[in-house]
Length: 197
Image (cartoon, rainbow, N blue to C red; front, side):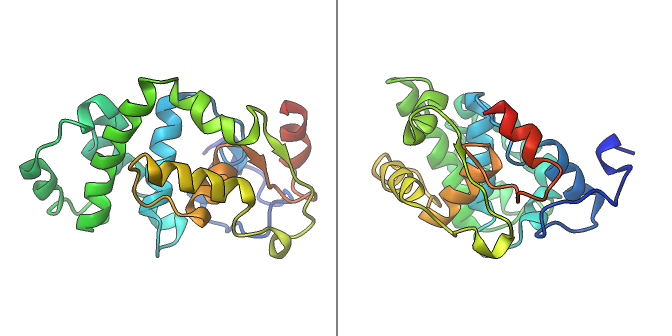
């Protein structure tokens, strides 16, 4: 068992569940500043796949998505043919939504265009001046669904051709990859991540 799950009595964010997959994600990934461009691309795509669904639905299929989409390698995904995309509609390991499947391919092509200007990581982090934003929310119901920064990110991503990147999706993405620290102040992850910032 993952060490992060050994003590289920740890104080965590109230949105969490007792699902071991979710616990491991919360304890070891969510909210930790991520600077790797391809990991950021993967997370942006996965957050888009969540639209209309719960995050755990996508999280439990993450490995299937990685297999289906060439390890989220944008160079490879950008070359997916119409036929390959159609074949993915038969893949029971992912959410078989045509628009969402097409969006990952479109996003890969948009990613490569961004990379012609600057590293994708630099671009994504530019919306907060290159630094994580530290929030101090005591409960989940005080955390906003979007912010001015996520609205700006969403607008610019859309302008560049990215799909499934609304302001709420962008904020969930920013939370997930540590561009903002939205662990509740009572959560055991709050202080360690605060020290990373």
